[in-house]
Structures are given as structure tokens and as C-alpha cells.
Image (cartoon, rainbow, N blue to C red; front, side, top):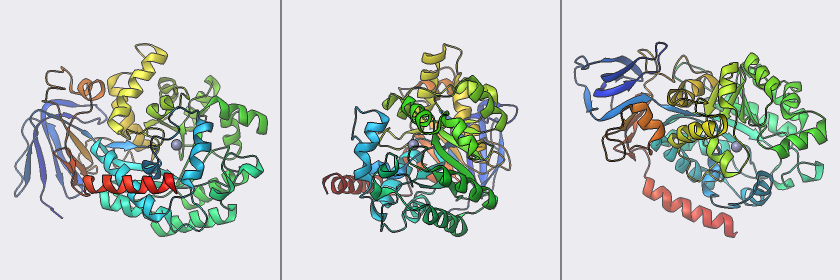
Length: 451
Ligand SMILES: [Zn+2]
């Protein structure tokens, strides 16, 4: 490990600090795992520092990915033209064949891709545990440690199969008591609540149509007893709303709320089909939403009311979602899609470029309960940052670096620091071998779809 201070000098800086300071030419200095200086003009001298020439670049806080299913990296491109429920029923039998090796490969690939696209903190939602599989949560935790990103995996689950009126087949659902015991064991083994933590566990039953109400309720009690966060899919499609009306006589949010699933320790993936009263309720309770615009458009599910949710007080983070419904898996592209789809839906004032950047950073940090440590470039915060190159043909001359980042094509990533350590340099992941991973992904994918 290289423990020299890292000085990034001569770069544009977008801090996202409380005053939202931006510098046309400035510096950021990381020492150990913390930021020790941020400002305009040249950096102060640091003995023995590694100095990075930031001219032609902009430095931002590292992005937070708030929703993903890493294992899906090895099941991309299937059911390319299906609805959510059709896509799920096609994919469940393929997913039933995943094991610790395929999850380990998929997770490394998906996390490497996230890192290459600006992500320093990744939440995951793993809910497929085929019978007799080895420890799949461990497989992805080890992958995150190899790639070097800050990791918040949800121990997900499904306990409502076809025979009980749910959507998934019997082979991928688990028994409720086993789920709760495995989730508690995962928290005890892995969850690190300490400042600067690289690993925190989340409790994450999958969705209303694949999980029993009893599990939702017990999972919420477990999460609160253990002091960890809670995550599930909610209000993704109108099919889901109809399903909840038929089965419970209420909307997905009313159902979730009855089971204890609102509050500042809860965030929902998607959150598309909420009415005005529900948005108010989410804001008042501080319940978060992981907005996944590419996946939502890929499945034609609709687009969340991001501006209304944020105005109501709900933190809205960005997520790539699983790669089976977003083959790109690129977090920087979600900023652009969030902005474009918000404006296509709500008009030209629906979302501005800096709000898109805030969703990817500060809102994501708030959703994970870490806005005191990450999400902005401030002295004392963790050294999680992205240095984007804006002087090549794609971006040179774009007047505003934030507009270049959000409206332009994905820029080369000159440097990504996580916890003060380089994970990407010169647009290449330096912690794992991307080319080797690509070969492994293709092999695992073949085995899964043809076996
Ligand atoms: Zn999802």
C-alpha cells in the first residue's frame, strides 16, 4: 500500500460542500484515508507527496450506487424485449443455477465497471440463494474487497414462490426462519459500524410479489434491533400495483408501511408509481428512493418523479440496477439518463445538472446513512473521489464542467480514489485485471445459459 499523500493539482473542483463551492482551478489533497485539503489555486506543499497533474480535469466526490444485483453481470442480454414480470419469469430458472464461483466473477466484473464509471461506494441487493448453494454473500463481499470499493450489500431473500401465489419458482425461495437466521449471521460476521467502514450489511427482502408479509415484518424488526439499514424493491411497475391491490387491497407503499417499511433507515428501489400523498409521506418519513432510470426505461416501467420526491424531502440516489436490465452497468450514464428522462417527463425545469450530480453523491450517501463521511469533498471526509478528464475531443470547450459531466458522453476517468487508495488510473481499473475478467464472464455466462 502506498501511503504517500496524494495531491491533485490544477484541476476544476466541484466540492458539493454545504456552500456548494466550486473552483475553476484548485486542488484536493488526500492523506491516509481522509481529505486533508480542498481549495482554489495551487495546493500547499506536502513532503513526499505523489502529485497528480489535474489540468484539463474536474474532480468530484465519488459516486454512490444505491441499487444493483451484481450477480446479473453474467446473465445480460436475455429477455431483451420483455416486461418486468415476463423478464423475471424468463430469468429465474437461469438465476437458479448461480453458485459462489459465478457470483464471485460477476461481482468483480460489475464492481470494476462501476468503479470505472465513478462509483466509490456500492450498495448491492442479492436475493437469489438457490438450494444447497455455498455462501453467495461471502462471494460478493470478497469480490468487493478485491476491487477495492466501499460496499453495502443487502442480504436479500425470497420466500413466496409460485405455489403460494408468488412469482419465483420453488427452487430459488428459502424458508423464512432460515432467511432471518442467515441475515442475522451475516450482520454479526461482516457488518462494520465503525467510522470509515468499508463494509456494512443491509437487510433486503426482494419485493412484495416474491416475499411474504411476515418476512417483511420480521426483517424490519431484525434490522432495527441490529441497527442496520433496510432495502427492497417497491412500486416499480403498474403490474405490481395491480398485484398488491388484488392480494392486499392497497397500494405497494401502504402495504410496505403497514409492515414497518418507512423511515430514514429505509430505501426503496425504483419508487415509480407513487401518488402525491405517497410522495408526501415518503418525504415526511425521510424514506429514500434508488432511482434507476436506464433499467426503468429498458423494462418500460415508467420514470420516478425525482423532482417531486426530492422537493418532499426524500433522498433520491441513483442506481444502475442489475445488469440483466441495464447491460451497460455504468453509473455516470445514470446522471444523464436521470436528467433527460426527468425533463422528458416533467419539462425543462424538472431537474438541473447539479441536482443530477447531487443525487449521485450526497443523496446516495444520505440513503446509506453516510453523509457525514462521504458524498462531498470536505476536509475530514473520507478520500473517495473521481478525477474526470475533460480535455479530449468529446468534452474540450464545454463551458461548464458539471454540464460536461452530466450532459456529455462518459469522460475518461483519470483517477478514482476509494479510502485514499487508487482503484482506477488512466481509465483502467488497477486492482483487478479487466481483460481476464471479461474472459471469465463469457465462460460463466455460457455455462449458465446452456446448462
Ligand atoms: Zn433491482
